[in-house]
Length: 191
Image (cartoon, rainbow, N blue to C red; front, side, top):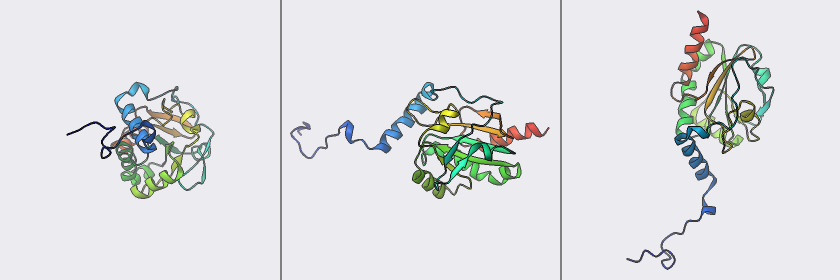
């Protein structure tokens, strides 16, 4: 059997330029998972810091003012690299599945990635997330929080604000137990 790609027209020839954007994003996510040192290209927002005064569109193209939403009560801002990928889905579903407990504790939630609005909308609708997903295409939010990784995506992380100040940070962004960690922190504050 002749395995010469140049003479056998039935065998496909792959070129770097032919790799689609979704494959590049998947590869970037895989690299970040295997190489955590690439996860953050900047200093993450610190405990005690004020919520950045930024506006970003949600999945429906509506402007969301983070500082206004986070000014009173609790606001969880969680970041994920790519909508509709396994780890990002687990992280969001953890929050969705604990939505009643989070609301009872007075927590509002915003999910953020650098995906386009259409991708965020599809992700929100498919997973039935009861909270907005921000489409940080310009990477202003990920940069302000210090979670933009070296390939330009958001690194998985979470920040809890109370009355506009950061009170808790999950620098690695838990996947299946993100809500449990937030609720656990809140229980320590109630004592």
